[in-house]
Amino acid sequence: MTKATPPVMPLSRPYSYGTALLFGLISLGALVGLPTYAYFYDYTWLDWSMFGLLYLLTGLGITVGYHRLMAHRSFDCPNWVKAGLLIAGGLALENSVLKWASDHIRHHAQCDQEADPYNAQRGFWYSHCGWIFFSDPYADEKYASRLRQDAVVMWQHRYYLPIVLSGLALPFLVGFLSNGWVGGTGCFLLAGLGRTFFVLNSTFCINSICHLWGRQPHSESDSSRDSWWVSLLTFGEGYHNYHHTYQSDYRNGPRWYNFDPSKWLIYGLSVAGLATALRRFESNT
Ligand SMILES: [Zn+2]
Ligand SMILES: [Zn+2]
Image (cartoon, rainbow, N blue to C red):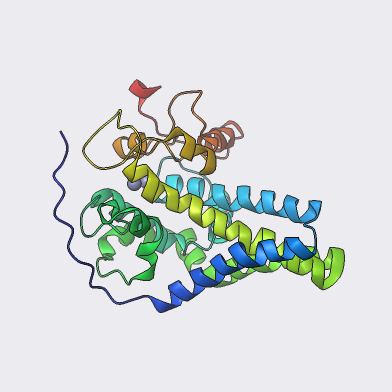
């Protein structure tokens, strides 16, 4: 049965100017700076390789590290593996894992309600990226308290800024060493700003598209939906109706043929002895 959603109240929250400015600059760099550079110069194989490498690293850092490991505890791993995953996720400029995962736990607990941080009942643009432009009055310590007990989470929270900055500095440095300022600028635009913009939007698609359009084969208790094609852009997170129904399953796409690189990485880590206690709902294999 579909759970009744409360009427959506007019939004009266203070703007979050700092986040809006940061997101505006990244979008400007990706949508204007990136093609402008391509008009005058060409992106090199090195720029594209760095883009691909950092896209994979940071995207999987979010889905495997921030989402499936820390928000949902769908598997265990040694602290050094966890630290690696959380550094990779930190490079994506989606806030520290403490903030990201506590918001996400609240998203599941309060889905479609006023306290849902990316409430899809407010429409596509709000749930996609509009929510980051407003301060959030509903952040609640009860969603963060379990995460605060984790020393690796708190370590990542403390060093979040240098982690983020190194994700932007690294492509510049690699490009600069290859071809001076022109090379540094090109690699920074493509593998720094452009990559950040695309990974941000891939995460945003889960909160918008996967709560508005698609099938609900597993449950209609909230607005989550399965969109297999969104999985192609989001490392397997498009099977969002399954995920909302079986939150702590390490797979979002439970069938062997579902495109879910995040579950393949977790499974691969377990084969290598670097991940244990993989949680799955057996009836859904
Ligand atoms: Zn989730
Ligand atoms: Zn969701």
